[in-house]
Image 1 (spheres, rainbow, N blue to C red):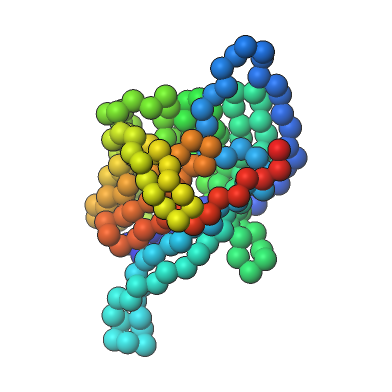
Image 2 (tube, rainbow, N blue to C red):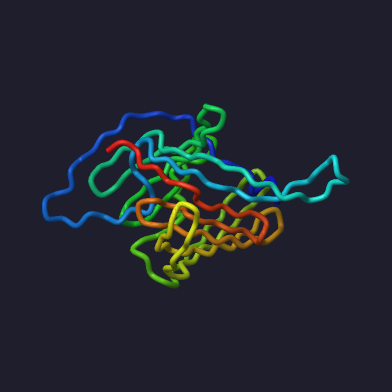
Length: 211
């Protein structure tokens, strides 16, 4: 369980930012993930781990983690972005995502290989009750996920108050079942996440990158 929840996707890539204008009069798409280089999140992560010095008891740990958009290619109504986690002045590559009016999709995983078909974290336009399933393999064996849009809710976190889309996930991995809930806000992405009461993530701050 702890190994699964502590996995951070990695992708060692870098690229320049390019942009194409949206045609005059066309509605701008709603993006549920930042699409500018240097967009930066700080999350407070709370989780449990075994304390080997204290009879292997579970202890609660809280720490801040910084994520950043390291590259973005924007082509009007779609963007491909790359993200990294920042610690001790170093960037560890995470994921490559496609962000569009259709939602947020993982294009490449931690090993740099393409995810085929792309893995949807959120599908838009938002429709309550929309659900999708996916099967695959991970370091802990076969994994199956089912995500469902449960609605739009106001979420208050240290970074502020957001109107966010709630997505509930049922995940089966390593022969065990888990439940996760994520909240995504327009232009910001993930603002809060919770998993079976064992792991929680809240947005502490969000800083826009360069235009």
